[in-house]
Length: 271
Image 1: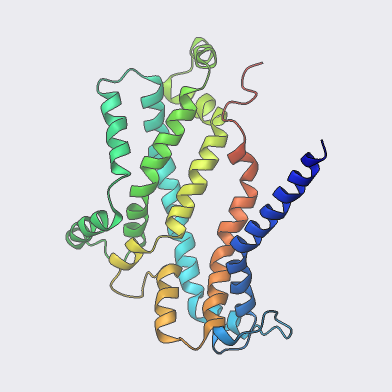
Image 2: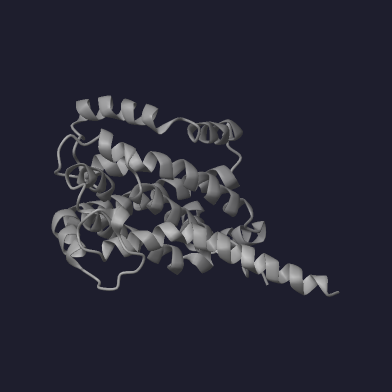
């Protein structure tokens, strides 16, 4: 009986140590961003005299890139959910000929290396005139978001009790009305989860952003940081300040959507 509290204390200590190790890079990023310009290796452990010049430089040089990333990520989320929701509903609720083959094909697309997709898109975008465009990046990032969202939403929609859908049909609702008024509200948690991860895919994308852009007209923040390091190796406070600013939207969304991600897709649907 006396060993149980000791094991619990040991587990707590190990958990705290592991958490500290995982969060240390984040702390160091914030710490360096509040230091004067210089060598990051010689930075003190604590920002005793915070210097915001790095954030001023980051907003001046990378503000447009942050806006670009936000537009592309939001656009990719809208496109991905707009395509994935009806596709997932059809695969989950209708007896489609070749449906399992389609699902398997979607799974296979998840294993294709991103560089292969980027190379193929570069040739297609050159012919279509989509290089260096917001639409091009939105569609490119959606190639990763749509398959993931289809698989996630299909699993959630298959779990919706059939009685709910049949009741809607009895009331005279058509297939589209059932999807919009019944299936999507019940699948809210799965939609939020799919949208969140789709946003994160697009927000953190570097490969498509680097491959499908040949100018700085449409430059996401990931490419901005990459170019920033190459031209300002002695301005690590600005580099880290840009990284902090780029982390804020993702962290805020994760905190805001946490309860939706952890909740069940059909919790409380049937009483």
